[in-house]
Length: 528
Image 1 (cartoon, helix red, strand yellow):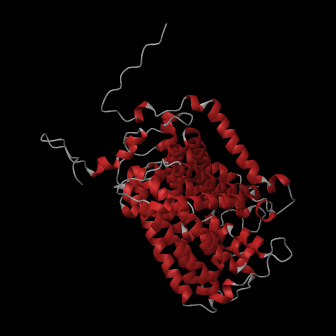
Image 2: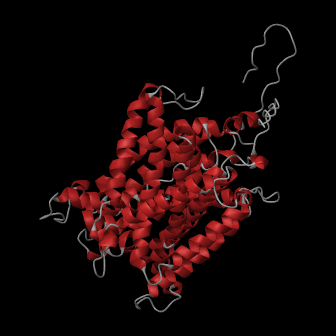
Image 3: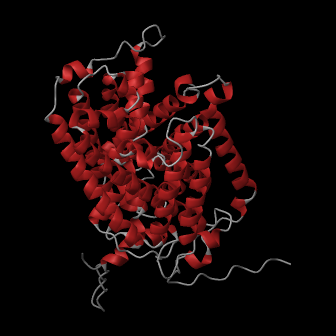
């Protein structure tokens, strides 16, 4: 670092400390630093990779991909990665310049204005709370397979036994996550980093163990479609697009690395690296786990692939003892994923509240002097997450619809960042942070692909498929079109509230506003 050049002899300009450089982006947005910077490189990387959580996502959704696309659904994994990489590269440029809490909200607001920012933040916040519940439900997919003891409600054969037990296990996990997040980012980061370390070691070990049991070559796996899609208008393409949801549901949340920017050291440089490393590592590790699992399973046509999922493959291929060890690692991965999802939601709610863009903004944006974290958002998000879980007891189908819609809202929230950013590029109004991550001349084509990808995948996710939105029971049009209806209600209802009520109050709250070095002159007196 160097001092600014002076205009001739005079007193030396003091050199800025790293912490002052870190706070420059906050000052540019009008905020004063309040959250304590305690996180290092691995902490931010761990936050991004634990949100994506390869062991959680692959073990939770493998059955879905195989059911609707056969083993060849694997090709959706690199397809989704390439599309999300374009989005992540755009986010890297934004993270280099604005590494602030509630990144998606602040980026949408800075690029598209306050109305776009509020809608992006609202969609992301709603989706995050539903995602928290959806991830917590993954305990039910894994723990009872380790030991029947974890089936606390009934014996698992009753109509609602699994759903009720999932709520119980999920509620305990959300309570744990709420307490950890409320006690401060340092405790959360330590647990999260330890969990991610275990997850990465377990994932690599799983790849090695599966590779040692390979019984067929990749060509027979990557071309096996089970004949799915025959007789349909789009043939296998239609089946593949449905199965691709299993990959699309996993590779998102990498922006969390930047959302912790106000609590990280040198976030302008570290956040972009963490975003890319988290996404690329997740793609490589997850892709190999899926491929080797399909190559190693004893019977590629076993019905259990579509019911027991990846848990079945691990237990069947590696045996009960080794298999259960890996399933315990999946439990760890689910735990730290919930921690990361809630941490991201807390920062998002805090960011919107300090702009007075939520009811009771002052209370939601208050930083605990003891724990140096917003405690009220932690508790509120935890309570809402448990309430959403309860829906799953008697209406598991409706919950699956809402969960699918939550992922769509995250993709739409990302679009509310990439579209305004593209417009700024086309107008020549976007300047990357000097000396930090920049796409250079590749910025425009990458941004265009990111927008096209986000729009196409959002439409694919929302398409009114019976197998996704009305999989069991009597067919209802409102379930089939649930994505459009639910998102319409959330977006239009929320924005109506903002437009008629909250926008008249918006503005950085006084207790969170950066103080200008030069006092502003008082406003002129009103004319009589």
